[in-house]
Image 1 (cartoon, one colour):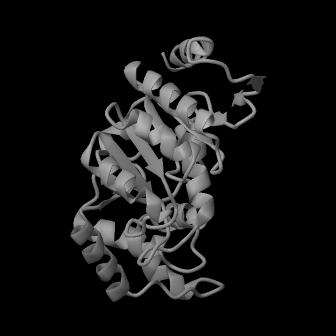
Image 2 (image 1 turned 90 degrees about the horizontal axis):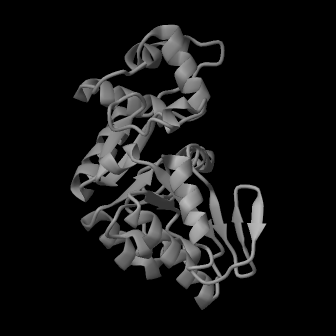
Amino acid sequence: MAARELDPQERLDWLRLARTETVGPVTFYALLRRFGSARASLQALPRLSRPVVAMGLRDVEAELTALARLGARLVCWGEPDYPAALATVEDAPPVLTVLGNPALLQMPIVAVVGARNASANGRRIASELSAGLGEAGIVVGSGMARGIDAAAHLGSLHSGSVAVVAGGADIVYPEENRGLYDALVELPGLEVFPSGGNFLLVRAQEARALHDALVERGVLVRLFDAGLLAGCMRITIGTPDENSWLLDAIKAALA
């Protein structure tokens, strides 16, 4: 397994193996354990009991070229910039595509997620809660969807915000969030793409695994129009002052 910065050839091998059809995260790591490296695993694929055809070298090189053009880069499992909490998950994505400041992934993170069709009041509370987390030095993670997700990112743009999406590094969805997409990259924000898009293979479960790991050390906060779910406790949405105890609890959990 990687425990250091990979060299360019190793990175290419990791990406090629990770993008090979039928090789999911669990299989990827099993192959590394068995054969010792991504290169050796690629060479062994045709000899397996169920032979597998590795992703073509040209396709992988085209992906790397497209990522460089976009200003994105790959972070592989075990490298210094790979999220430490995510690395402990059994089916953690072997390769992440990252736009922005990867240092945010090593900071305390709280996920704020919720309804796409949220009320104006729900969006306001999500933004204010996220801003309060940012003031406490906590990074906010969400999914860049419309509604609560977008409000959470907007509230934490200047303090640190992480968007975890599965649509691909070259795709903005919904289109109405294009300005948010640009701001996350230019400000102290970050976008992480474990999969998907025009030149990345979609694996929705990887995005779920990343999201779960991001909140492992903190509190998963889901905002709804009717109430707010924090961990296993449901409370009624009130004013920001009335919910200030929640911020204190989150800060304590991440101390």
